Length: 304
Image (cartoon, rainbow, N blue to C red; front, side, top):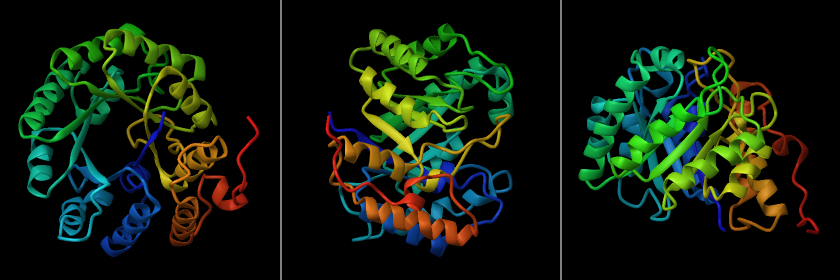
């Protein structure tokens, strides 16, 4: 199995940062990430600029990379949307794949969208079907799938109920997100197993956070269950601003380093990812949460 790398640093990685990154710097980081060989790159989210100022230039970023000869054909540019207005904006500036989701936590859902889980599910399903009908790729997610900082344990049946509604609507590209970072490897493998039993043809992605240090272990568990798409952020940046304790994403260069030592994804340029993480550390004038950019990689495959 060849794991697919979905880099989300420019969106989930930056949305928590108070220091706004200028458009020209984002463009440079995006170019470096594209050159590293990532499969998908999330450039930003289409949200209200006053609520998330860091995402105010998302439209401009997509417009830049959709100019001729600026985006290699092998890279899918994704964008996060919350509603129909976001879809309209994304359609206007050339998003390749729309990502959208529903929280399985009532508290997180209301803080994030102002809607109940049921209301948000109906809205997202309708928006996703519109995007699909327009010929766009769509990935729908369940956020707080493994636990919530406000509510604690999230019932598995609630997560699977949202998944069932996705599958009934013909939405087969799905993701489980560990928004609060509460997941354990055993939990990740079990829940994805249940999703595949609901729909053996599902194209599953995982969006895991490293809040409590289990991010890479949870990625391995997801791989064991058959997950093929992994969302991560260069430098380990990020976190949801609407959860109780915000922790960074699984770090892209750490994940790729693991894969390459295990004989996978040797095509990805790890040195390019490390260079981008160092650039970010210099820009923000602090250490990033990632490890490999500080230690340097182990440059040989492990004996397995």
